Length: 80
Image (cartoon, rainbow, N blue to C red; front, side, top):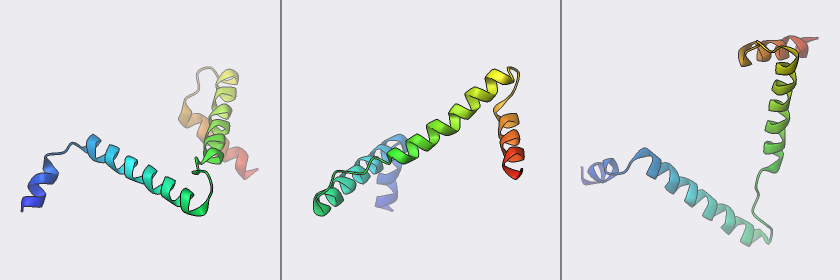
């Protein structure tokens, strides 16, 4: 019961921040053990940037479009 009381004294934001800090420490430790630099997942960032670049291009061609309409158009184009 005491652990539950202690857990409730932290906000969700504080818990998330603590988890992120610990994950970053773990990544650094893994990199040290492997003798490399920590991984920053740059490929994921590049993919995300490319994905949203498509939305900007679609928005120029369809000024009144919503993101939902753009995603539907992407699905239709992928099927072709």
